[in-house]
Length: 314
Ligand code: GUN
Image (cartoon, rainbow, N blue to C red; front, side, top):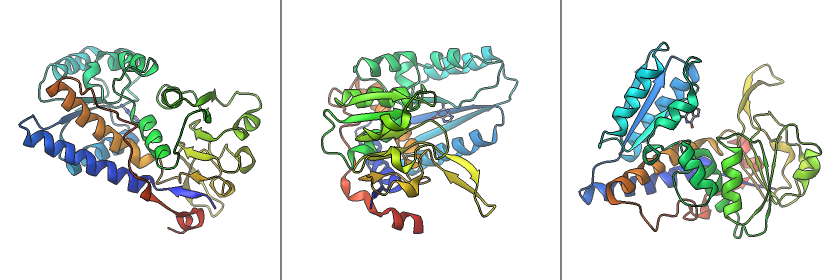
């Protein structure tokens, strides 16, 4: 039976560590880390995500503020707000929720956020730093994926890793992080020929294609570690809606370990955002921390629970 990697417990552990770091900064007389979230328009899902991020801040003692702007906000006004936040010493992290309305150029807006405050890690400077292995802020979901992998893999060197999905937000940065750990990385996507065959060779599979239950049992080598980043709402056989990942969870019990959906990668994303905000505050108030090692310094391994059967029951 595959071990289930408990993303909720690992995220809680990371939150505890972030809270301790925030408290230590305040005790040392540094400003309390502050995150500002910008939401343009009234997309329902975005509102839910933003609410969770603000709630997360409260949990770990990060100050938060929100700018909710109408859908017809001009790009010029949005850029002026970002410029103001870039220059506000009480703001250490700036997150502009995407998708943005169509009349706004997302790349221009994300590129206007100061790289030092870009807690999403989306700015081209941070993307470049990641791809050259020279630090910077690492995007939240990919860093969360690495932290989950750290709980079940002792030695990454030479491991065969297959990433399914080539998005800028997950697939590409995860591939860079795995390369940094000396894995042999194959990046694939839904148009890749012989995808099952390629996946079958992998010691590590990161499924991030946004294709519900794409990865079948016979795509997974016995003893592989499977991280499922996908999350899609589908109609179950019983006529009720359910959330599924990119992996056919019930079929991968011969894996060494697998993340459930929900409760795997999802909870890590916000926890890493809070971690990134605390790191940004530290760097902005101290100068860069030479010893910072965001993904090698992983949560402990006691947070894997039971087997797949246990996860299904809970
Ligand atoms: N929309 C959905 N996920 C994210 C995210 O992680 N960051 C931003 N900025 N927008 C999102």
